[in-house]
Image (cartoon, rainbow, N blue to C red; front, top):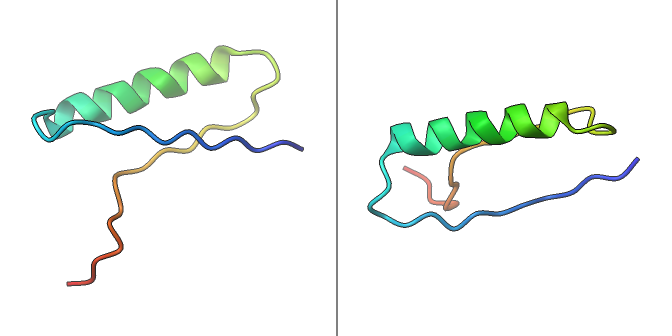
Length: 50
């Protein structure tokens, strides 16, 4: 099994709803691609604790 990681740098002016839409579209494209069995995505994690 191969696992690929793609990191996106998204500008500060992009709305959270736009990011959600982008990740949903990427998921749809990925899962329609032959050989891709799964897709996972998530928000930016800076590692800071509250």
